[in-house]
Length: 527
Image 1 (cartoon, rainbow, N blue to C red):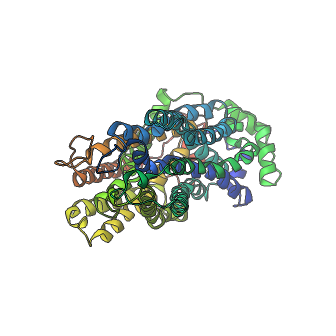
Image 2 (cartoon, rainbow, N blue to C red):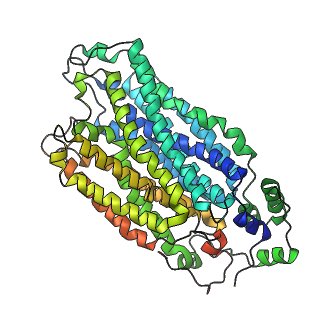
């Protein structure tokens, strides 16, 4: 049997959508806005970094980051993110969601600024310090995943909980788009102020000393919106579920939520005592957890892992894909800032037409269609569109056929975001008990980042041409075969999604079986 739900939790579940819900979305969402900006803006400037620090005198081609350096610059923040998700996820259950929420934001802001101030003008010093600070930037970003998701799920009502968690995550789309806009504006301003010839005309002048300021401004700029929300993060009360169910201070939880909801909430002492007496104490590695939630944790970790292998492969290396299909001209025909501008413009188009709409379709339909079906549909459509690119790849990359490629490529992003990229973030924040919710979300997210690291490191090498790999790389399986591999990864994600439980319209205590006896019925996965 279960202890009867506390009045304060009932009030939260039944609360009408009101101003504090939107405030929470903005406060948590601006963290994700910065997360996305910081993680993905590096893909915009890696070509520029290669030109500035690795162009060899007398070379006929602009410099580019060596294979190991490119992998490190693109992947080091993801390694930090994985560590941060595990650490802050665990800490959020031990010390409280609010207690560590502000620290992650401070860490992101400081390390983002420090990344832009990387020491020196030589490749070794700049790249070394850039990687160091981006690791700790990723560490802070990692903490935002479990904390933001858990806070929003515990604040929301059960009717629109999915919508609000999805809205927090959807700010990631605006962060990606904002990164491209900032890059377009900054590169355009510097191009107009300091005109430069293409590389093949004058190699040295095509870069110019001003370019070193451009990437630093871009890397640092995303901290501004996030820094503005720090005060409001600190003003948020601890979630009622943490206060009532973990610290067992029902009186404080009731007072906090009475103030937030603008209504009087009273608790019956008998119900409070029953809740305390029936509280579960088993941990993450216990037999009880594996019996109740082991399959759920397998579902959330495996699907997030498989999704991020494909998603980060596509996102971090868009510029390489666009170059291979001829959408961006050869590097030697452009100046450094012209190339940066064209990369940003191409990525902005994908973000505007595919990425951002996908997130907000999820916001609109998550509490209508449900998490399970959106995730299943997303993986299915990603598989289909990836195959639609891979099969006629040799045809699509020919001049005159690039539009078809870009449309299909944009649709894979649309269904990633109107699909598993959103639902893998939402579900772990709903299906685990309160005292393990942040930890389990962190573990699930860390599995995703492990997939992202494989995607970031592996795709770069795997997509190399079998006969003519880029300088510094060994032969890979080729872009077409790499796309087939990603299609297979998406299909595996579809299969593992069958294990994902449906949480639409149910209270967190009902979903997670909070304070149920061991013989309580567990809702089957995928139902």
